[in-house]
Image (cartoon, rainbow, N blue to C red; front, side, top):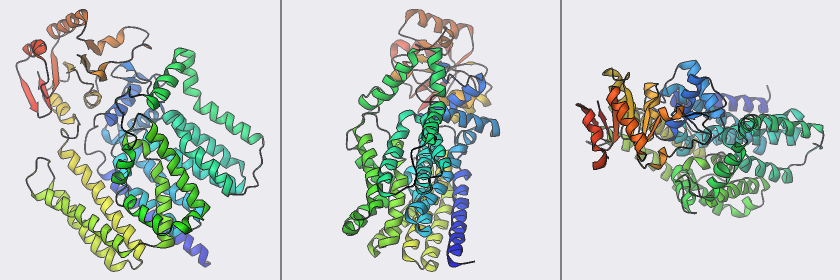
Length: 545
């Protein structure tokens, strides 16, 4: 076995160990807490209703059609339910798996771009250690799946450009199509910019052939399948999706997610700590060499253009920029291998890790409003021990730094599950409410939720609930695609006298349970409480029965 092959197997062995450790961190605590409002609960409940109804064309949320996103995330989640039952673990299972897939293909993409297996392993570790990646692993959303298809499409384009093998072109098209079925046109922003720029720096024997036409047709066939079926069902759907869920999301604040232009500039360092604090210094110190390297320029532009796009867009949430962090990881790993880190940067990272571990240590022993379980104390001690061993036995300075942050990230990931499980009400999971309802055999009653959209209640009870609309915009549902009035069984509009009378009939004829948020009920609605003789207080939430 020659030296090149030995290095290859050594890198693969390291990657497998890292993947195994990451898998333990990801899967160990992901099911310890219930689904969390809003996004996590929303996607979990839509998939549950899809499995229950058997309608895989028309997603519903609390019994009303919900076409805000294409359906691939729901399909994947339904598969999780089919394997493990309807649980929070099952809802998030494939999110953990997709992050492991991301790590593998970040490694492979880095090898293709920089031909260095050492920096490729580092790129995977750095990506995993970004707080935004850890946060995305704890929530069921479209963003981890979109990020996966972005990474895969970039990798397959690089392979196609280098080898001219048409199979990679088809895989590129399939990944773009699956990304489109995940989050619509957003899939184009990263991969197409990357592909165009990469074409300028990578000579290729690939010629325009019928394979390009066939791959385009394959993309259209897969990406357009769900949209075509819905347009056949209702021709208004195309206008609705393009205008309301594509253009309006970019240009307006209709969804209540408007943030200033500089929002991501402020938030990115926080969700990229500590690496995005180090990156500017690495770039500044080595600017003259970096600007002459076409790959660095490619990756830099591939980050900046999408970053500006998301900054200009009106609708902003932290996970939207998750796909950019794969490129950050590639750049950081190669810069660290090529130019190294200073002792100051090393000490800052060690201090960061110690502070995180000590934070868990103190949180577990000090009296706080937030419940920190004692297991976090144990994890803090293990992290500090790992920090000592890393600095004692890993001789390579840069590798020592990367492993230090990796240890801190594992501590955050493992601790988060235990902390979230002990503070479910505080983090907006209604699982304790559902457990109370089930333990007291109230689940056969009609469950009413006043002026809040709470899919997590429906998910945890695995039954339909009735939402009472009294001005909350979240319950101002889109019903233009409903074909009958069955949806009214799940939504009562108190602004309508007819609907108000209907609610009174429900409460008089059926046994009901009423859930309130922070006892926020106006004086003219307090008659609702007259139907109940008992209550249970959960700080944010009150149950009347």
